[in-house]
Length: 407
Image (cartoon, rainbow, N blue to C red):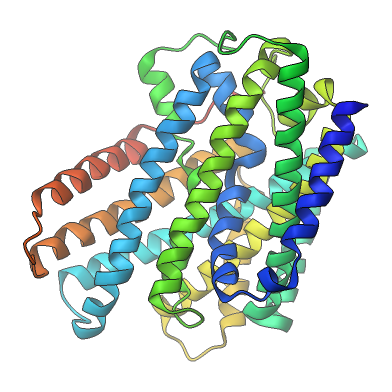
């Protein structure tokens, strides 16, 4: 009873704080919400069972590695907001312009894949609580939800989506902190051992690395700030990348650390979309209900975030004289195709490859610009070396990442 009270009390307290009028009306917070919604929606409900099933007691190390890699990619995105955007305005043709165009096409496809993932996972949580196991019914429910998002996008446009997104992210953050408080209390009360559980399948180092690379998607979302130029200035968008990544990475790392004793006490026997709900429910019975609300909020808000990002991206690429709402609808149509052609874990891996291709193009743009910009006494070799390492890592994700073994 104590652990349930901790989870609910912290959730309510944090929710009240986050719904404060001053925060809700903050321009910087609104700018941060879109990338943050995408990041925490990408992976919070799936990252723990994924990492613990593949890496066991090394799961926290895997999360730290993914986070460092993602933050470095965020640095590249911030660099390009500052330097590539003004350069492309002055030089609309050339190699850098072609790289940017190719990057945007790859990201548009990745957004559609991620929207399909978000809503598929959302439906899986709902159906799991209802005791429905029919996959075809789940796909139809996902289809209805995607069509609902399409309707909202058509009727209200980005502002309508951003308002829903703001509320959804607020609910999700409150629940996440409530869950973390309950997990910390459980770990202290039970006195469980740390970092002693094993992966569900014995894997080689290469296999583990390839599966970890296939989880890159759970850290994506910060790049949406690149396509919010009509609503926010460069400084706000750069800060949005930093703040959203800082918040999300902190939550991810703490969450993976606190779930280590849980997965030792209640080992994973099979990996599926709702493993986290069943496992945490064995420790604190109220958590599956909070996670259901979190799934509703996070997957919806993440789908909305990537619909906004993808729609703005398509408008830049196609340049037809159509309203933004039409481009939002195109993203949903692509997502609907994927819902009916792949499962959640295949979609995660496909999305990781798509985002990795986009990030690789951004790294190549940044490397090209480093040589063109005034040096002002700053050494360029450290930047080039770091960008080169990131590029090699992204090539590995594209070429060799694989989905985690699942039921």
